[in-house]
Length: 372
Image 1 (spheres, helix red, strand yellow):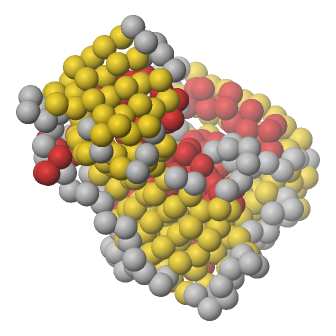
Image 2: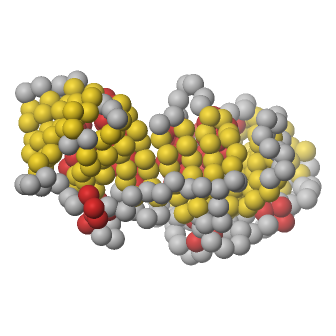
Image 3: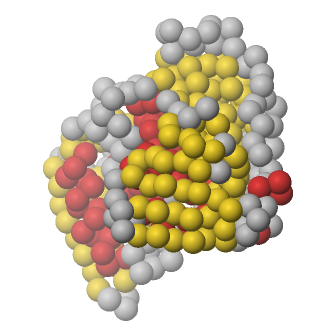
């Protein structure tokens, strides 16, 4: 194999592909980056069996072929090369690859390309198309609520609930629930499916899709896999098996009290008050709601106390209720509206936070026992 390509194109592709390389691969070949050169197109693949990624870039291919290079070292080499163009040539007899750019030259040992498990594209009649900015919003407003530990696999993923023209994404770790909906007017109106997608692939996807110009993302799914295609990128992931809880049953049907609060004022106040409590396992802060005032406080016997007051508008009875501070802060950073409504019934029952003007997003969080 022999080809010339731009450093920028190759580096971007590698940085996308590297997300499918495990830090502890099941087999050595899975630590590699597979490159197939044909018809002036480089097809670059990586997989850890759970996730597979294919990126395509253009190149001046002088000799077609395939090779596999150790992913980490190849990425580090390409990142540090001095020139704008890169030439890569392989020597199959010696199992080596020469990488040249400007005044720099590297020789890397290649891996057996015949051992690499090439990615098979998902084929199914189940498909939808969604704008990247809409998908990012669905992911960012839900995936943070997933569990990070494998207590139950279904809680480490987001439910992707398709119901005709409505898409709902939901996530929970049993202590909190985030639900975001979107109405897809230009999509098929006769599709229904419930898919649990690993949070990791969704978070990676939202990072990769981040751009000022929205693009179309084509989604294909089967009973155990889902794929995302956009531009020259193809990502396929396993789905999580299991039954996701009925999120509608978790959301209280009504609330006896609610408070109108400035989003950034609440976020900043919790940030400060939680400085005292964050070393505690449960990071507890207490919120004392009164007619026009919210008193936030935290107490750590080994460090001290913190208090702060902010103005609110309470509709209902005063209440004192405690939460894990991180559970509130996690969602507030994804709220773009000036105000939120904080609704509750009792000091031990689930409360909700909603962005004013956004009826398609709700966050439910369970209180914790107050710190003494």
